[in-house]
Length: 155
Image 1: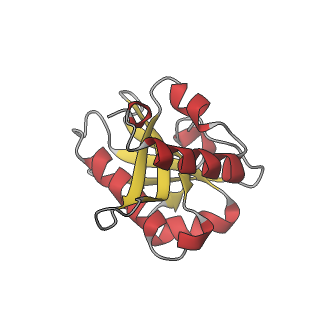
Image 2: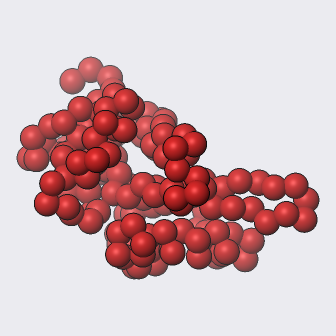
């Protein structure tokens, strides 16, 4: 559902907006207005009366045939929650979402990783690929980024 239409989720979206500006120097509202871009939001659910917290977000887009891919464009986790597995949880969630599509619609997840994130994605079974093997992910571009993909099913 569209988190922008939920009064309960609007503070969490504001947290994600702050993260997006800090990590990517982008306006999350503008990112989400781009054609086909979707977002997954990881939140903690506190006890009754406690506020929920935004533990991270991921943005992605599905590319139908002939590309048959999900491209992940952004993954962000607030500094205080890093190294707790939330980034891994977001990426695994996206991979499972992609796997739910038929192989004729989606047979891989692609992304551009900044150099320091390559080992993180390799631990999630992503492998580096040639630039022209993956669709443009609509994400911010770093000069040292590495195109990566995770294929599933038969080639």
